[in-house]
Image 1 (spheres, rainbow, N blue to C red):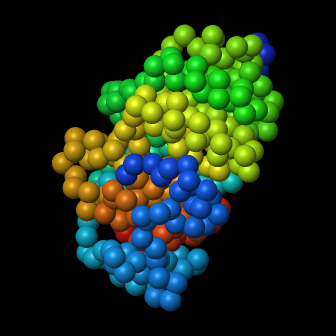
Image 2: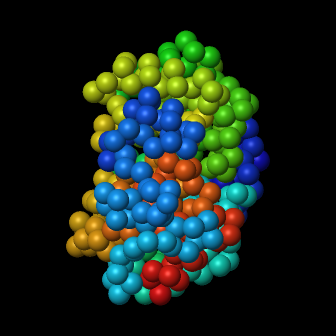
Length: 342
């Protein structure tokens, strides 16, 4: 597999998939969330009425038809923020032609499009280019908002990084509990065990190229936007708890998936990054739609005027939604654009 940026075959790599393809809840809270329960302090939707009694937000049916109240149908939405995995791309990590067409229609209607992902830049850039955001404009929000770029001009809006001690602590905790750590630069994923199951899952998610290093903490000489500790979801919580204690005041630690711990600069979250982009364009939060499926999407769902969760979302994520769209394998993003933008 060649490096898509240089066309050369890197050494010691694991091949990539072909081209085309609010504060964080605590570790205790996420134990419940991983099994479909709402974290403490998060209001629940009534199972009888499908409506959150404290906010009036409605839970949609699995078919995508909303129940209860939604924001006024006459509201004009000026920003669309989409998660990628489980939302904009399907299970094969592809953007389907209907989804691409819907995004282009939204941009033509004057809507600001934001790709809001936990992926590193190397994993978001091909999607942005496939959607022609380099020509049409739009924002790439990578690493959960640690790095934000206006894709047509390549203006860097935000580039927040971690101190090296975060890498050292992450590697130490991973070794202590038998998990794996990984770090990205602008081209590769680096890990001591790129063949490990959950490292390979992360590599696949980003269609990236993994390189093996002997000592990750010693190898990383730059300050990364994020570090990940990955492993068996049945055991990973102990590592999250240890990291929260050892990195208190240094980094935020949270689950993006039951098998992925993300370590990012303090305050980094999708909702905060979207708020900064909206401020640049004078867009109030009431005119923003956020669409996602994962735990790390909750901050932007809570910030947006209209929160949409995919039908394939975790149950705890759906509790933050006004409306449930069809799944990512049913081109649910198309329904969002047609229903609320066009």
